[in-house]
Figure 1 (tube, rainbow, N blue to C red):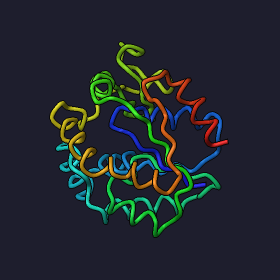
Figure 2 (cartoon, one colour):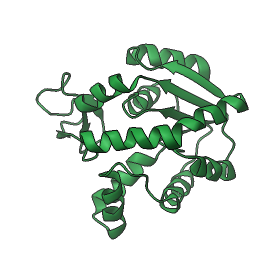
Figure 3 (cartoon, one colour):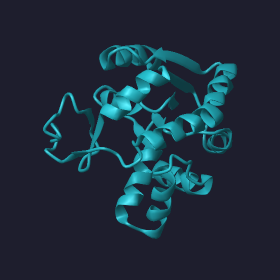
Length: 204
């Protein structure tokens, strides 16, 4: 089963993936994480990607597809979840060449609520765990004791840019998958546990 996660920045896709990992055995294709890994290497490609993401711009399609194919070639399991991909019609067309999308889960959240979440979000620099300032005011990851930091692309300017990109490029994908009959809408304003239960019912 190939599952696509859709939702505005801050809608809880990363948290949902973490929670699903406690219940399902799946291969995760998280383009955002893959690109951040490349940035962390300090390579020329990583610098190019960082210059794009820091501005809230989409990374070149060729780079994205390359990272996706590389990930899929490694221990692919019966369930594959795509997080942060596709983000445009062009990317969706490329994904169709790779596999069939069996389910598209749309985490529906208002822009105002998403902004509040993003401004409160922290990510572990060591294990990638996503949490909040409220839960971890000491900025220490509760999972690995790594340092919690604010992502470089979580500035107000970059966030607004991503919202603009989302409305222009990604939102039309909701209609695309709805017309195919594979879209399921989930109220992302609910608690993580409630969102998880709703998603598990759909997958199972």
